Length: 366
Image 1 (cartoon, rainbow, N blue to C red):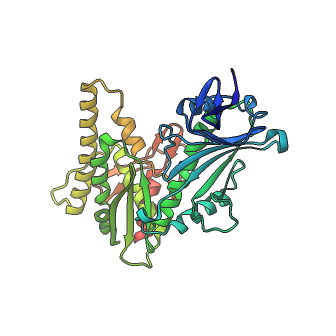
Image 2 (cartoon, rainbow, N blue to C red):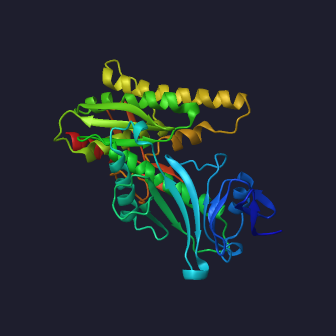
Image 3 (cartoon, rainbow, N blue to C red):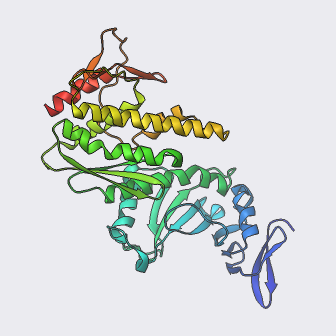
């Protein structure tokens, strides 16, 4: 039989769907159906069923299967609430929860839940909201946090909604973690390096403090990890130093490996200039080695694309000027005592004015 059916099994009412009996299910009500499902096969069928085929049979279903999980930090359970025949309301509820006894973060679980709530409210998402997982009105979230996705397309499946909204929720959680772990007098920047080039890219980032020292600003930087993400923490020794200036310097620093830099050799080359040249050249050499190795094993990743993609700073930083004006032939800026020169960089129609960027950095730290 197609659809839902209530079947008496060993004296208990169980839920059957498309002829598959969930022997561990139970019901809260039968018409309309309200209950909990555990059978993996049934849940997989429901995830790919259009809502229009379920809305007249179901009021709410709790879907719990150890074999079906959503890749979100703290994921606990998935619930489908369809009340179309009553108030035309369709919700997909993702419950996030953590065991207090295993929480080992530098911020409290209470702060974490509330930061997610505040982020979602501030972004004013049309189809995403939150509520206390236990149905209470307070903000303690003792039993976790419900992230509620409003489903407005009945021709969509639950899987369609998960594919659409899970990446958004991942970004929300990533933003919240980044905010909660920000050093009080500095800032964090998140990078997402492919595993093949993570080590050389992180090594290059660690030289940023030396780069800043050569600009006359002392900073401490540290590398940490959150899942697959690389987190660079930057804290200036002088708390009065404008963080926006340091962010701009970081933007310039991570842009250097993308630029075609031609060194000029001088008998009295400054050690700081030589070190910077070596760091940039060393990173580019390691990326080229990765490319050669992967080509040898017939992998399709292109090192040039990796090099460009790897150094995209994910958060909104105070980046320097982008220009659409025609490039002047003489629009070249010497960097660190004429060791090398930079010109405008044009990628996919976006023109980054590197000469102006370098001039601006010099003005900031002069």
